[in-house]
Image (cartoon, rainbow, N blue to C red; front, side):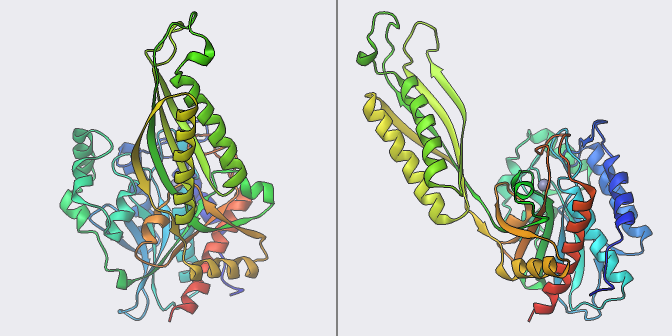
Length: 412
Ligand SMILES: [Zn+2]
């Protein structure tokens, strides 16, 4: 183990070259899935794999990877990786660092001449950010993507068709990218945290325990439009007031009673919408996230209950229309243990935390033991301000490499 190490300079060179592709000039990158700059980044990655003498693997969903084959042809595959696409004008660390750290881990294992009981594969998943279809590549590989989703992409259909054509992909190919879970030993991912918890805790590594679930619904309060000058406050059925009080109360309750959860009222619309009319209706878009099923259920029940209380108080009707619901996904304990052992090997302070954002790990965890680490990052994320200190990136890549070795030793 002591001779096994990543090459930080080589990793840095690759990171800087990749960051220049689709650069926004202010530290960010613009690489929406299968757009010109994303395709260029993918080409760069393939060329890198070829020039390093590793085996390139591509599937019908456009996922591509560098493979270091085990001596045993029947060995399962351990996937390590993330994504090269970005949100529009996003940061250069999100996803890209995870692909390059995985790639560096593969090179380090090869350079050390280490024989692993798995085929080790550093993978770049297509469209993690969901410009076209959410988690397209990882869900295609996991076999959880449906034909319907490909017929109803998040972008307009003609854009989707164009992008597929440019990348030489077809719906049939995407659906055919599924791999038999029996061939998969697991999936490990490194990612920037995209939040402030690791820096506040002075931890070098965050070991993710679960990817949070996401629930959302539209709430509509119905009241009565009235003259805003002549109707006394206590004689109104003010839908706006009910909505506003709900927002305040719900945030207070989540802060107090659901410390592992978050809530967001992302939109509020009043109608008719004039200075001098008491709002007849108020529509709210609310989203909440919790790390486990119990949290999802109890938080949802509490929110609906709270909305009913506000409706009663202000004599309003209430409609609740559920929108998306994504179940929380726990990370495999054996992967978490491998990351813990790696942090101990490297004497890096770590803590456990949940992921408030979706990741490829969430898709992979449904079919094979999967887990991820975060490294500290600042400046928020999904913006060119996103930043991670280079030392933190190197520590993360080293942890990933050591976790790979720790993990494969435990595979029965
Ligand atoms: Zn990401």
